[in-house]
Image (cartoon, rainbow, N blue to C red; front, side, top):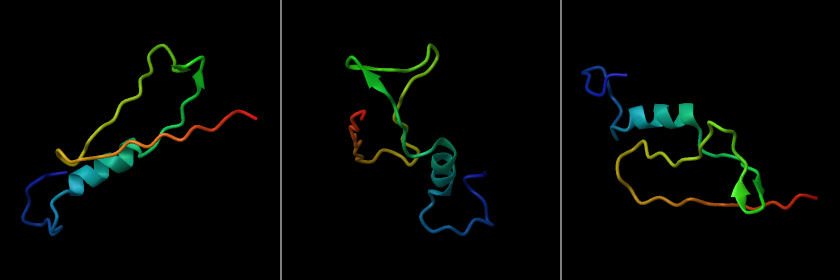
Length: 66
């Protein structure tokens, strides 16, 4: 997606960030056992900002196993 194009008509200028965010996703579900994230050997959890430096919040919801 070209960032500068005469055919581009979006006013905010963050269309590329919107596409990136839709490809990566906006949430994750992770199991925690014994106080540690249960991730595979080559897995990691990270926060990615696709729309320049802004103040963001990360929300965590704990659901106990029944």
